[in-house]
Image (cartoon, rainbow, N blue to C red; front, side):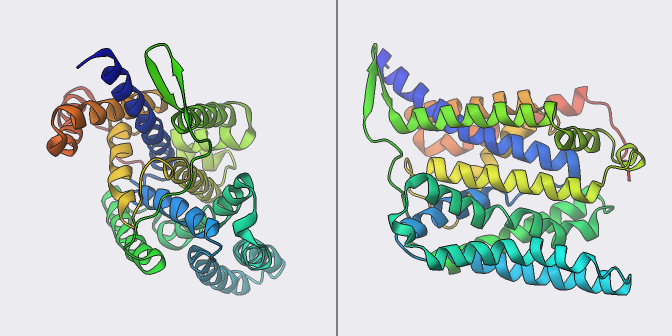
Length: 345
């Protein structure tokens, strides 16, 4: 291996690792706030990439119909609860949040010639379509089971993953899609040739990670999420709504997943089921961080990206095996060094 190949593999590893880091952070956030091991995180990557591809082709992405359908069901469930409690004033707000947003986005998709919009507007539309799926899924699938054991939540998570992957096949078909790069071409820095799209991925990922840190450290909502992650009972006693915290964590996770799909779609062809493997690699990073540490999870995800890149050079047939084998010594080390703690609820 010469220096040029080493730099090329390092660039690929950092690019993939940046995407895995975003997913690992989202998984840690969801788990710490809700105790859900969110297996369908990779589906948001796929939905984000394929929704953008559909918008760029001038089509109405089928994911918007899923958002509307989920919004209708959530509205009916919450409306029945509000009517039984005679809380009639909640109905307009419920309708605006669960039905208004997806219908407004659907109106924009039908009213605009989306294929001719600029790339930033197409990305914003994509995020507006996919991001509401997170809190809607939480309301329907996980909120009623908020006090259930982690194993039950994991089983539900797997079921949602299978459902979303099947819907992905219905929505987008078996054909793969790739979107145009944000910036075509490359630049030479010494002996290294850096692709502009790789720079976009790493740069935007860093910006998102810094923004996430600022959100948790500087905003009241972020501090409420941190408090919920540390102690849900204590957070409730302080007046923090754990239900709202759960919805917010799923919203952030869906946003990060969809944006990861938007970033990665120009460098690889994505299929309806591609999100599973991508999400699992982010999960390996989250496991390295013990599902509690954001910095270690991000560094673990970068390690996964580098290991995958160099494995594809030396033993491409076994690269997935090598990457996922990394989880075994980590789990052994954590099982030997971590003190067992009973579940809070």
